[in-house]
Length: 432
Image 1 (tube, rainbow, N blue to C red):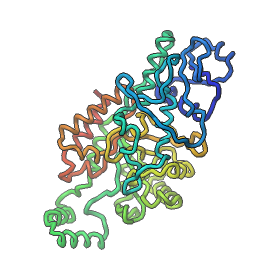
Image 2 (image 1 turned 180 degrees about the vertical axis):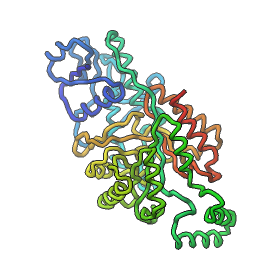
Image 3 (image 1 turned 135 degrees about the vertical axis):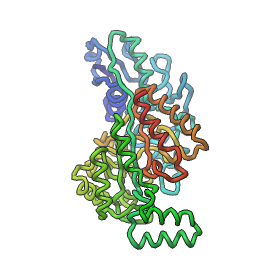
Image 4 (image 1 turned 90 degrees about the vertical axis):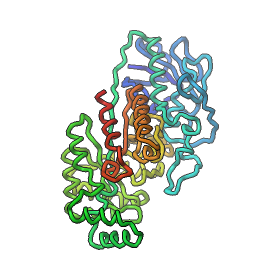
């Protein structure tokens, strides 16, 4: 067990050290502010303070982990070998940067509490982030820093055996609209025919007729293919179904339809099923609870995982609402239009509430690649090369690669051609 000496044990400090040592490095850690206990410890240990006690492994501490509330400060990002670093230390520190304060800044999403420009949906944009502006968005820097720390500790404590970690994936299937043409109800179906005619979309009108007549599979109906792929995979897929009421932003088929209920139940036989929170529920905790109760009635299982419509997060309100409903996991942390690591890590972490200065039970599972970001690339070759690059980066730190595909991107629409191959590429990355 690692013992950390610090002059003051704070919630921010234990939160950050627990993530780096327990979750990333799989190493048990304990804390002390008593010099005599630190000296008496005869195994692996380090100090985190302004000055070293003696000749122990030492990291000079930044004030961030001993602060409270939000402060306004400048951050200067510098090169550090193959990666980046910030919060520089001094020559007496065994690391050139305070990776713990920097990790807390990224994991707590500190910058998202600062004034920033949001997009049309009120989402924090990648372009506003420190990582994007300084060229390390595509690096899981928290995990990279942790491995650098591990290497240094191994040099100082060569007899200590570190646990081994392995690369894994979590494939997420998002279902905001289960079917493009089918099961929409008489009024919506009639409106669809009329819209195709008025907008001269005669090919779509022809497709709609074939699907509604039973001669062709609905272009969004990829569920049989996904289940078949699940049966052959070692990793369990995570589905999120939108079952909120019809609105401007939420246009799935009615959750009262037996065919939709049957679909959710059949998927739940093979995959993990969570709730895709409706857009209106993001501002209405009562609506979120109704959505959750509705899903639990369908699956007869507790909802433990949620993903928000449009990947929208309002920190800290969104996560407080999930904690109030005792939901254990969130899969919303990521960027829709950019590949990369929004929180700087490819290891799931717990949400830290900066207003209350507490670690909460909610596990944040950040995603690193969404199909819409891949769609922006011009060629299939570019997309596959990008996936390979991200896979290799995450494998390099034995992290968890979380991807978000939609049922329609694995369907038969022409613009999503080749996305099944990319999905398979990610699934197969575990076995290669």
